[in-house]
Image (cartoon, rainbow, N blue to C red; front, side, top):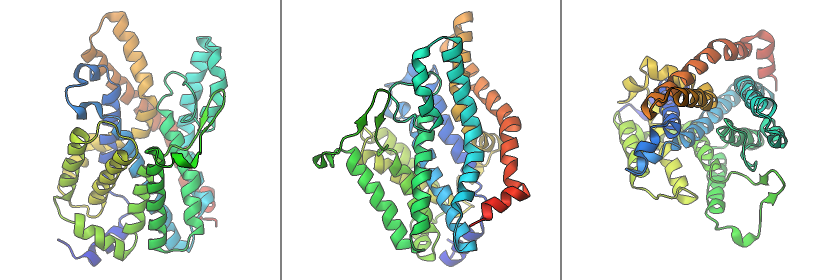
Length: 371
């Protein structure tokens, strides 16, 4: 096993973690499986079969790790990171596709289908508040997780900005907030008498069952960013076979763990996911490097954001064709996968690529670097 000091140097010089697109692929495949027509044929046979939704949780862990790593590295280069630059990059990546999907679905069901009762929900989607809305607009159910992420992006970077550059303080904050969320989700803070505010169209409350995933991803990033924290993880997970062991542990937990993943059981799953992620980035030459960097997997991971937002559109078209032609669940599922990938690939090559290219414009670079 490589010396921790040398491994830390390699880690800090790594600008692109080669296995993470493959990890994104695993996440999105879990989501696609969970929504596929053939899912119902196997549901109930094994607990893990019904856990495709955990792909979203793994996305959360990955998101917390990546945004925190980028912020901390920018802080080291310039003495401070730019909130304006951070939000500019996030807007370019998230908003164009998100607004397109929301506008298309809302326009179709309200203006074309005449479901005017859905109109009051539209502002919640545009404001990234779909995770608190009562009911939902068809095809937009996945947007709840984007709302959770955006809410996290509004809070965590600001906290980092005003905290001293101290690993223990920042790691303690991330862990403390994750524990507080788990306590709340488990109902152990009910004695405080705090209740969510309910209005006609929303229940105003934080997603305390989801935030720990991003917080634990951020905790991993904070620890890996220093030699001391990196050394702790390197001793635990620096072996060539560690990713395989962590993946096996995660799969075992999904199969044998509690059936009700809320509060502490959910946080335990997030902790295993965070350890799995650390094992993939702490060294590039690990046992799962080959499979995770296969071109098809890497490509699906690269377009996974679009796949996540578009896949219910693909499912809708596949179901319509299935009904029209009397197709079975396997055929409909194949069409669902085909249409979802096709829509996402076209979007990525055209619509998304234009906005992503703005990151590299001279004027955009200046905005990002401004402090």
